[in-house]
Image (tube, rainbow, N blue to C red):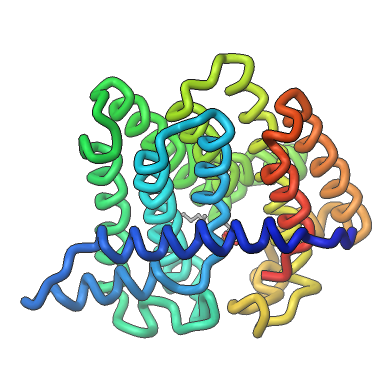
Length: 301
Ligand code: GRG
């Protein structure tokens, strides 16, 4: 499964990641009063060493269709704020109860639980404020579209719905692989798919182009989750920046427990090839996105 990741791709991913970090830092308000702790907790949760893969997808899909850079950067920053919120809440004792995230104490450990809940809430609402601002796009119809799609991807029919299934899978009588695939599609897949959609919408892509991008992000999202499950058994905690064997310890079903390590690897390779196939009609314009697939396959954190 090892494919060398192009250094040009890595430099581009790092560049985008740095720009997103700076943008979010500037978008989180500064405060000196009693609410200053909230802003510190938001920065702690959002500015750590994340891969910024969702913003990268949004920006690179957008560039492929000639979308305006400022709109892309702000919308991508909003996506990363939603992601950061989800990680903060996912780490809480009432959910996954994790102490380490991105190689540093989780927000409720560095601060306290109430602050972590509020920091997550504030990042989520900040994301909508960013998307709704005329600074992101002058056309109100486009802004409404982005807001509606983001709410859909993050909400009950997307990430939050998937998290609920993850907490109470109720597999009785159903095919566990089907339940798991649906859960993943909502919990992890919806925001990855939304990232591609943002680039396509802001770039004015045609319907058939948007469908190709959606096919790519759907397969990539599933591959991403299966790799996450493989890293849970094969990764090391220091590189991952979080605890491993969490699913095993919690007695949870995941793609590796259902398919086995080899079966999971085969599934990832199949999905990766399919994800690349969706991009074939874009030719060399999609080469960075094609390399994103290899990056996801090779990721160690
Ligand atoms: C609590 C509302 C709510 C939702 C939680 C996305 C999510 C839903 C939880 C994240 C927990 C998790 C480990 C999910 C599996 C895959 C995944 C999304 C990993 C984290 O994303 P990365 O690898 O993280 O992109 P970085 O740190 O690189 O940004």
